[in-house]
Length: 76
Length: 359
Image (tube, each protein chain N blue to C red):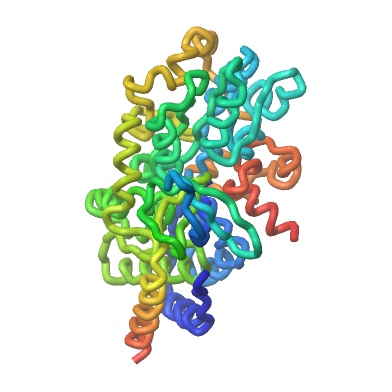
């Protein structure tokens, strides 16, 4: 139920309330984007037809980097 | 999508956890976490490291009560078109499931989201459409957004929305199991942020981590809990920072607060949990199926409904059992012939356990 699928914003509808989302492998579907502030090309999480958050790729990479650093500290 | 695979990091985390020589019980409250745990064998791996992880009440379909299902059946039998998510209509009530009453001529339809239900209302002006709104804080803003957009008069919502922090408090206060750490649901947290969990760490000294859904997220999350325990700390840490901010999705919170107010709510397997439900504010009473059809629902207003005989979903949702502890699991209770909701919902731990064990 709380499953949210990441997808990329391809284009906004005229009313800006919905956008076409690319989920990869040719799957495209409309989602309501009124709950987020997102730009074309950004990745969003979609739940029950609504974008609920914009994904931050930089944060994802930083989380991994931080953990690698913490672990190397534990090992030394 | 960007990849989060890092085998070396995963191996390093596992060896760190092993070195800690702990014996701990953690609870998460999300079917997607359970799916990642079981699908990737992480549950078995963690057990070998001394850590048991149970699901708790983290499946909105599973915690919806038999009475709520019966109320929807009653509305469908009174000619309303009842719409809900696929899993929900499959859950047996006391008399039947919403799916099965279709054979009696009732109009029950599966939707992907609330906007699909509104479309049905627009296309069936002569009918009354009820959307059975199931879901935690992740789903509540989708219901709220639609109600703020003046949907058609023949559309209404039966709110079964529930909120997670209050349920976690109830589980801890009930004291049936000792929980050494909580893995908070990533997508609920996307909406509410990390602050609403803080009281659990402050008042009950329970370490918490908000985690994402890749195997590496769960490994990192569990390690963050183990580290806190080793340091005798209890904070809310955020592993899922690519999707969760401390303050959450403020816009979504605003629409939730505009449309809903907190109410005491019964959860399957639990007594009434104070302030754990979201009821429509009186401003939206024309869209509130529980008010709009009060006269019909009156028929079962005081009626007590029993859970299916021998079904252990209640104990499972309180973290007391795992699916294989239930004598019905995989025997009388299978996804095609479910006895309780945890076998119906793809987010239920019995369904997840059955799917991956049978492969």
